[in-house]
Length: 305
Image 1: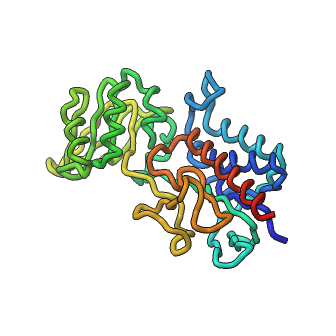
Image 2: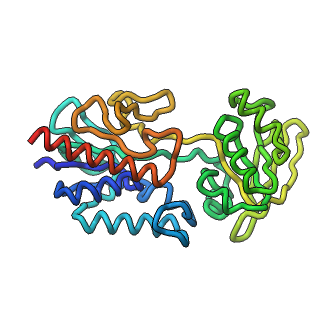
Image 3: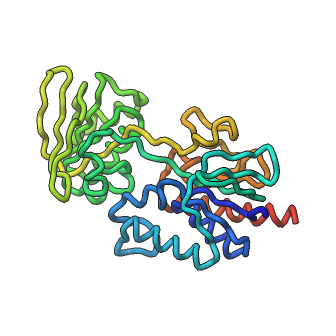
């Protein structure tokens, strides 16, 4: 028997879609994926999600969304999708354990931050290490921070951080930025920003929170330790779309190409959240697109009933 709707992904987009589909009596099945709860599971405090003026931890927010979706009849499978067959109908969703048929699908697999890959990094994620300046910059008022990267994202993050931090040091492994010229000019002319060229962060130190980083200079062939309170990794995100290659149209960076924010070229297959959004990457925008995708599913069933 085919499922009415399968939602792939358990971040804000997927869970919001599940809430709406559940309220429409579609009995949604949500496949959580490897990272249950998405990137918010790595966020210690969320201050900009509506209705939580005192803030809420990322895991607590996701737990509330999970229970909300469950209240309206969402069923959950703690598996991950390995393939999707979209040339036959009902659509075939292959997971790590089984194959499930679906009359409609919402893909909300999100994106994952690219990290430095050093041993001490994971320990401090959410404790001074962040991949989202627009999410976490207000926590670093009057503090010294480091931004790693050399593209437009690193430039944008650095400029935004200057509104809060006392100083921003960009660590870049090359001798020139890859960012657009206008962004470079804005960053290099900002008195709060300094740059360490041909350098890389090799270690993060601290106790419960970040206290310092060790930086290796390739040019000088030496390492130095810099006292900081925050490290922002701005080397990009990777949309979780490997299982969609050759199935749906993707951008060069791997984001799903949509027609009206949430629709694809296939009837009944919709998209929500960061998996199609290389720009905003906010919990609230992901949730909003999850709502849109669910409303399109409703419309789809109304048109095909």
